[in-house]
Length: 180
Image (cartoon, rainbow, N blue to C red; front, side, top):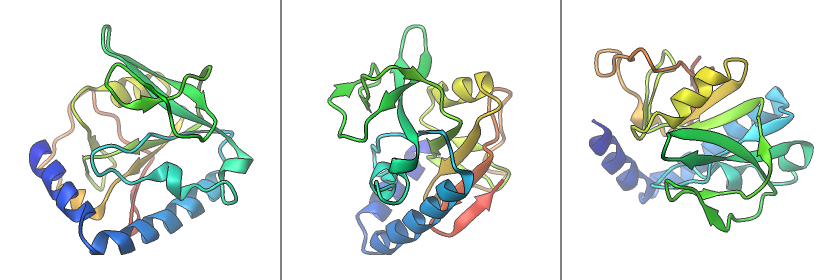
């Protein structure tokens, strides 16, 4: 299922429809972040056809009002934490080969979580490493915002959450809030 969703997402991201979806999701994300007013927003650097949240949150809209952080993954033992981020393109990669920040460790109060797939109950299918699930479980007070393309929606029959899965506070797509 993960491979299929990633292939569908890559095809979608290179289609003309994606331009409109990007604009719609940008508008919804800007409105949601403005409403949530985080002190520190945990973002992610986009990979593999993910929505580009850092680009959507331009300085004049959101960044000037809050601190930001990017996740940093360690593979052994498996662990993820956030590091303060200045908004500039990252020059460091973490142990998962994802662009990351070299800033001080930070704990965001709102976190954007990339989704390979999601359910309307707020459960997320990720890349399979469990990094976000462990971080969310250790920080239950944090507002978690899943970010996905609408085509990644899974039925409850297609995706049964496991004991380690944590429901997100909301899931946001180009259609707006679709879960949570």
